[in-house]
Every structure is written in structure tokens, then in C-alpha cells.
Amino acid sequence: MFRMVVAHRIFFRWLLALVAGTLHVAAAVAGDVQDGQDSPLLTRFTGSTLVGYSHADWAQATFPLAREMAPGDNQAFGKADMVEGEVTRLVYLGPHGKTPLEVFRNYEQALKAAGLQVKFRCELDCGMLFFHWRFGPVADAMHWADGYLESAQRPGRKWGYADAITGDEGRLLYGTLTHGGRSSNVLVYTSLAGYEEVEASNTVVEVAQARAMQTGQVTVNADAMAKGLAAEGKIALYGIYFDTGKSVLKPESDAQLKEMAQLLANDKALKAYIIGHTDNQGSFDDNLKLSLARAQAVRDALVTRYKVDGTRLMPWGVANVAPVASNAGEEGRARNRRVELVAR
Image 1 (cartoon, rainbow, N blue to C red):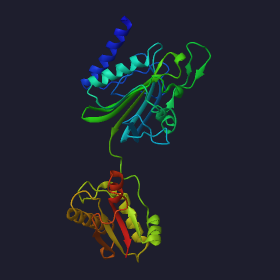
Image 2 (image 1 turned 60 degrees about the vertical axis):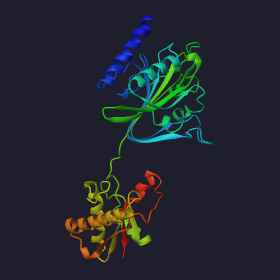
Image 3 (image 1 turned 45 degrees about the vertical axis):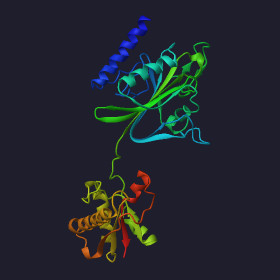
Image 4 (image 1 turned 180 degrees about the vertical axis):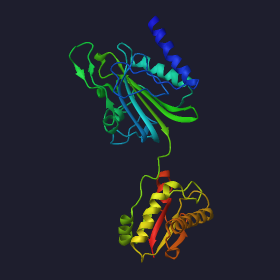
């Protein structure tokens, strides 16, 4: 009992540091996966080993909002939050003798005390939720520690660390946590580690912080534009960037502008319309003005910075009357916000 009290005190010292705004990463213990580290938002349960780790500066994370999985797909949640941004996934093997319930309640208590806004929880009978991490692309992307699970009852029986993630005694907590002015989506899932005879717990921690993707990384080169114009008479360019509601070109647009200028230099006879398109957010009149202003900004940049003959280019704005995707979601709206080059 004394050891348990001490362990809990150590755990809550971490919590106090979190609430106070101190970000601290626990020192890796022997057996941790190489290059893995705890999330600065949440410590590991005392005595646990970090056996699985992955981190991406920009990726997609899916968090369950219900027990049910998608029909016919045991790796897709039936109802979920999707977050794009910085994503960290950690898999911990708990100390011998600590039950999944004890580990889960400690995480639950610490997260709630830190202000977690719970969006979904699952107490046992969690269906197939754990398959999302044990199998498929999530597990494949994890870096696993050297070693294995070993039976505490029958020496010699061994399993890989990915097998620690099970549905037995599985409990899940998911919500959002605000810290340092940033909101994070945080999920904790605990279960028996592998099999009952291992006599240990397993914990998955997944943290996602939504943020915009770095832009300006993809452009359409002059040759590809020429082929597109020859094939269809137009080509959509997504390497032209503006702030929301603005018509001032962002610096990330330079690479695409350069390729447009090269296209016009390669084909001296080419004349083109520069067409601005918007999504359906805001009034039609405002979008019409904005789309024209953006097309004009592209034309002006080509004329002033790249010395293109202005008589070869005609800017035009069509607001949101020619979508290429549904405006019901952000993914579709992003495709609709574009500049097109149309051969005259």
C-alpha cells in the first residue's frame, strides 16, 4: 500500500506540473523503444515501458465517438472525429501486477483534473475498438521496441509487443484538453497486455493537435500545364495562395507563378484567361469581387515580376458558380478555392 501511495504521489506531481504550464518529458526507462518519448501533455503510469511510438508533424488521426465500427470494416469507426495536424501515438506496457482498471482510473483522474472535456468513453464491452491500433496502417506505422511479451505463468511463451493491444478489459476515454493556448485531442485506451497470463496492462495514448498543413509544397510545372491545356483547354492550379477573404498573393505562390511564366515563355502564341474561383462561404457578390481580385493579382504578378505581355492574359472571376466538389465540407471547399488557367 505504501508503494502504491508513493507511486500515485509521483504521478500527481506530474499533473501539477502540467496544470502549472511546465512541459516535462519523462526520462526513458530501460526497454523503451528507440527515439520514443512521452507526450509533454501526459506522463506514463509509474513503472511503465514505452514499447511502441510514432510521431508525425502532419497526419490524420481518427477518434471514436461511439462503440460501433463502420459496417463491414473492423478498422474504421462508425462515428468519429477526424483531426489533421501533429499526431503522436504511444503504446505502454504496464508494470507487472498492475491491473488495467487501476492504470485506466489513474489516467482518467489525471486528465479530468487537468480539464479534459470528455467526448466519448467506453467501459468494457468496447467491441472492436482496439483493432484500430493493433492492425492495419496505425500499427504498421509504429516503431516497436526490441523485446517481447512473456507469460508470467508459463515461462517461454512469448508474443510481439503489438499483441499487447487487446479487447480484454478494454476501457477508453477520449476528449479535448486545452494547454498553453492550444487544444489537443487526447485518447487513452487500456486493456490486458496480450493475455491474462502476462499479468500486466497495456495502454495506448494518442494525442493530436490540429494545425494547418505547410503549403507551397506542390506546384504544377510548365510542361504539365502545357499538356493539361492541350488535353482539356484548362488546368486548375492549387499552388496559388491567399489568406481567407484576401486577394494579396502569399509568398508560397512564387514557385507556381514562376512555372506559369515559363509556360508563357515557352509558347509565345499562348493567350489565356486567368479564372478565380471561390467556395460558397459568404455572399455571392463578395465572392464574385474576391475571385476577380485574385485573378487580377495573379495577372499583375506575371506582368510586373516576370515581364509577361499583359495583353496575353485576361483575368476573370466566377465566384462559386463552377465547383469541382461539394461545398458541404472543408475538403470540398478547399478544392473549389482555386485559380484556373484557360486557353483563349
